[in-house]
Length: 121
Image 1 (cartoon, rainbow, N blue to C red):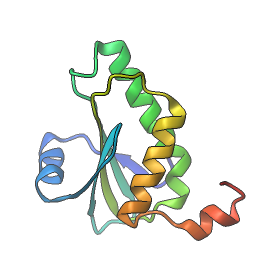
Image 2: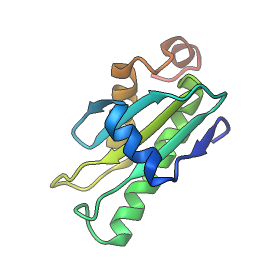
Image 3: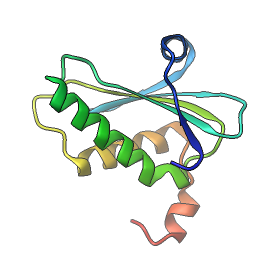
Image 4: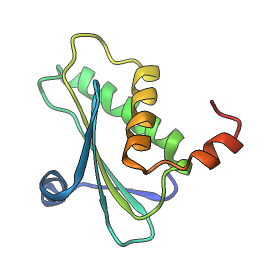
């Protein structure tokens, strides 16, 4: 992740939950807020309700990888927190990638021109 740092402090997560705009989906909830910096900060949150540590860590890896692939199309200067929701089915990479792209488009934080010219669908 070139233009992205990790969001680690509990106070930063709490500020995002309080003041950030949120966009819920079936698998994920995306919180966005401007940070007035030349880079993005990403935080990933997965509750113990999702499952044991192996499953939680897998979901976190899937979310980070989806973000890494979408990062060139996301504008710089945002704080982003992505929270996994509890669902009855298993999380697949394709579902998370598709939903993350949809939620970023819904938030207005996705550059469609770059996506179209890169040859993706």
